[in-house]
Amino acid sequence: MNSFGNKMRITVFGASHEDYVGLTVAGFPAGVALDQDLIEKRLRQRRGLMHLTSKRFEKDEWRFISGIFRGKTTGAPLTVLVKNSDRRSEDYEEIRGLARPSHADYTQHVRFGGHEDYRGGGIASGRSTVTYVILGAIAEHLLREKGIFASSRMKSVHGIEDEAIPDIVDLERLREEDFPVLSKREEMLRLIEETGKRGDSLGGVVETWIVGLPAGLGNPLFGSVEAQLSRLVFGIPGAKGIEFGAGFGITKLFGSQANDQMQYEEGLLRHLSNHSGGINGGITNGSAVNFRVAYKPTPTIALPQRTVDFIKKENKVASFAGRHDAIFAIKALHVQNALANFAALDLIL
Ligand SMILES: Cc1cc2nc3c(=O)[nH]c(=O)nc-3n(C[C@H](O)[C@H](O)[C@H](O)COP(=O)(O)O)c2cc1C
Image 1 (cartoon, rainbow, N blue to C red):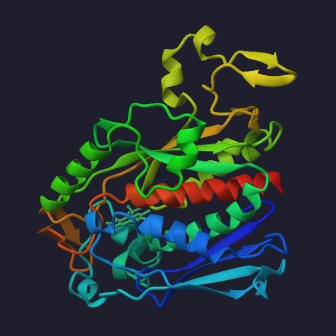
Image 2: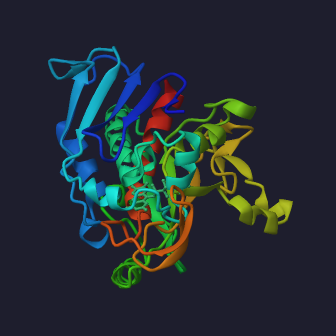
């Protein structure tokens, strides 16, 4: 349940209120020099709008404890630890048994027979996703020499849609931003701030492009590029839907509109549109791999809601004035982008 991969295999461990969260990646190529600045930069982007989101301020101190020798990867499993320093575990002792609606408190309690680490959602917390960001950054080391990169934008926050369509120049710029949006940045930020102040929360859609992948990668059926990306994406807590290319909207097109027509241009095969999201028959077709993920509103909110105490077996009305993200999707964006980089590297290996 906490491992995934084909050519490389990742294993994630640690929980929100344990000393560390961590990740091991086996099969990562040897001889790659670690770019600490890039790792720091990607972590900073994930922390980006923290003042608008959570009051839990983590410094994300990280260190590799295996698989690096003299600053380069050795080919042995790489293990990274990230310290959890800003914990207030006592907050969770007071509410033991009180289920946060739509969080995993109740389901984990049932699944693990009461032995679950309930502090901050335990293994269901978004905290572990910090390790995916480091994974994505080290994958970028190898991708950049092949001209491959992933870039993501906030496609929508609640009802506000980023309408503009990015081109390749925008995508290269967007991947360096903390809050990558083309047309509706200010409106989105205003809504996030207002909603957080009211004690409520928001969801959003994050769109990713993987640019530069050649045609012919991936497998049919269960090994499809869609299947692999989906499994990775559902390793991000709070992801509720994924669609590729034109997605569910493709059902509203005629075949003559939906088909990505093709032609040779100076000897190179080109698709004239990308409704397929760069994938046909589970295999890359040479267009950018394009997908969108729906993240739900942060479940822990400060407004009163009906819930239960599953230990005392009582009905309750509870609000949770903790240190929670008004919208975690804006952090998940950098996590999703990092996993896209990892998936791209796994494919080209
Ligand atoms: C980066 C990140 C940060 C998150 N922060 C919070 C948070 O502060 N409070 C909260 O209730 N949920 C947060 N979540 C969402 C929960 O972890 C998630 O909704 C919960 O585990 C239930 O899983 P599910 O929504 O996939 O069913 C966060 C998720 C991510 C990816």
